[in-house]
Length: 257
Image 1: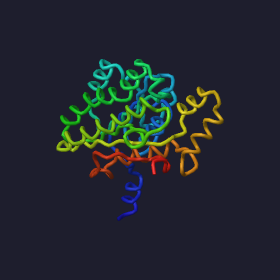
Image 2 (image 1 turned 135 degrees about the horizontal axis):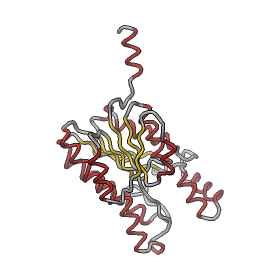
Image 3 (image 1 turned 60 degrees about the horizontal axis):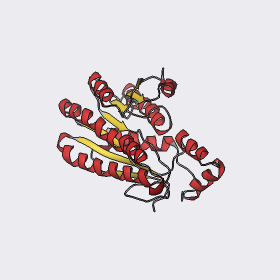
Image 4 (image 1 turned 120 degrees about the vertical axis):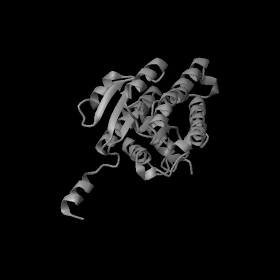
């Protein structure tokens, strides 16, 4: 291989030429994924309901920001129709409710299922037809959790139920659309050190003790980082994973073993 060819090859990103759409990109895992995907050559369309958070991504090469409420069907339809093409969709938006059945009012149940599950259904309902029409396949990655059908956790009643639903939804989608070469996989993290986690710790009254409790249940003795999750998302978005579909990827520091 000539030297100039080697230089071109080395500059290639793992997601070169791909249009990568994701939700909840304003902070935490979503933000890390947006930055890493752009670094790997994707044209990233980073959405979030919070426009102020998205401002942190403005001006980053390869990233276009878009305010989007994934609970609003009309907004999603308008957004999907505005895109000429798409290759990757990462449904990252979600909410962690703290409490048992006895702490879960009907409004908590409805909100959790609407954001954690119905938003995935709605996003897929507009993007899957687009991927079919394009005729070149694609990758859809859905955020689940190790707290789901994989593992129970204290005070995660409705959250665990929603994430189990995402796993079931994902497997059904993978079977139904495999002939179109559209791949569906879930990410199932353990505890990841994000701004939303820190907010939940603060809400428990003793953030320091809450942090120690989260650490204690991680067999590797630490929390995960957003970048560690982002590496897995990039793999599933890339052509490296073209033979992978319908799978649940546990990345939990050994919590579930």
